[in-house]
Length: 236
Image 1 (cartoon, rainbow, N blue to C red):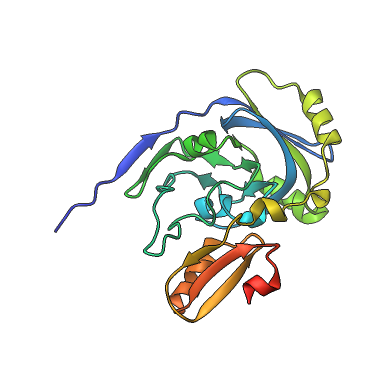
Image 2: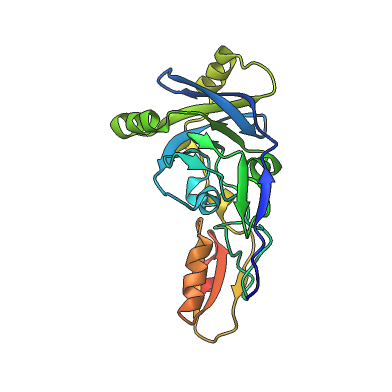
């Protein structure tokens, strides 16, 4: 019987200053990780127990700051982003990059261990220039969002002390999430074909998840993704 090698990696883009500031004036302080930056976006939450690589690459979260309610995140790291299935569709991610503007967690695991580990969560965020914050009471934060609804927020990660007033000013002057246009940002820029079957399903990409393309292929159809503004004559 063959042995499975379990890869283990230590977090390294961690222990930075971090603050999460809400539109209602609430300030959360925690440990910053990932990339040092300040971003403004709509604050939302996800209740999944696993699947943060899929959630972070989900185009439906584009422009948002994502809170994960499960208390421990990052313990199994991140799989290889370049891994694809037989059709060329990424195996483990819902798009080709992280879509969120920031990540909020209760506890970031400083050690990742998994047979399919490629990098740690903080390393992935750093590479894609995304800020993360750990040590947040995500239960209290989620209750606030459930009671008051999603709201704009700013996430700040820095190597030095964070000026709260400066971050608040950036939050106050930012464009509201509902006024932003995301269609062209999440849609494919060119036609892509997956499979060679005659029977075809054309997917108009307004932020399609790779799981949808995989399901179309599993049903036995060729999948063709087209940009969101493709003329109907070309689709037909």
